[in-house]
Length: 409
Image 1: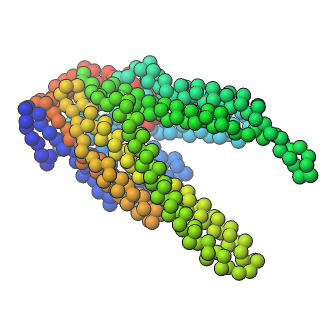
Image 2: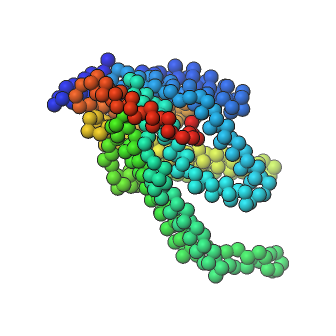
Image 3: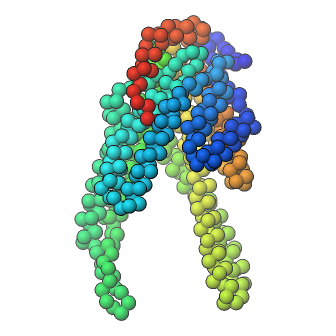
């Protein structure tokens, strides 16, 4: 049972996750095998079983969450996306550039609609103590929040045009064997590198901004009954987290690169001891392939702590600064370095077990995050729930019926 403290009329309820890695492994292995046997057609059923497991074992004030998504909508969404993806691949493989361009433009224009539909579907499928969540944002709100996506596209269109102009003045003819003129190749000069750097910086800022816009819109337009979410973080909070994440990634990459360089330096004398003209080229090729594999694996390992750091910092920022109107708020005490250590351990064990530790890793990370959140409620919880149920009877069901086409399930 959750421990409850009463102070100034505010009760605190610690969230708890009651699942285990062994239980989820059984769900995961069945999903994996059936997805393989059905060539991926089991995916919507697998997603629904996974969501239900985590919802059923997430306890808030002693009561679990419920995942009530209709399977029919999830299957329809999956089939629709699969058909669109197949059509896009056919167009790309057959050289239909006009059709491919139409697909890309349509995807960019529909991205905000897809996100809004996904959030609406997710919240409408979430219940707690009979209370159904809803997402009341208008489509105009979603597209206004998506302005960084369109700005980023415009920035790269402008940069592409600028690179074309600059490259026209920096083309140097190549020389084919025998001194004959070869094909002309553009030389990347300093202004071109400057344009690319500007594009990368602006793209990162746009990605941060769209994440901030979407998360704030989700919280502010989500609610139960007539009560809507409360949001405190500002854009600069997100920028600081992203900046710190880049520093963590560079530090991890430096360590991995140093280890990689040391291993390569140690392996080179061993390679030189191999005698014979027939063995040296083969050994060199094998060594190059091995080092390339180790290098890409090292990059993945270097990004794991940075991704975990950002995830934990963002989770704590959001769940310490959101609430429900003036009647409830959340607090989070998740330690980001503890989460980074857990992610590193899970990544290594997942690699060593060829992926079979993945369900245990997912449960341990989910438990650490869920158990770090506390719900603070003003007044009695039962009285609050009763009032929200009465408000939902008039509003919640109507909003659920007006959800429209739920593309993403």
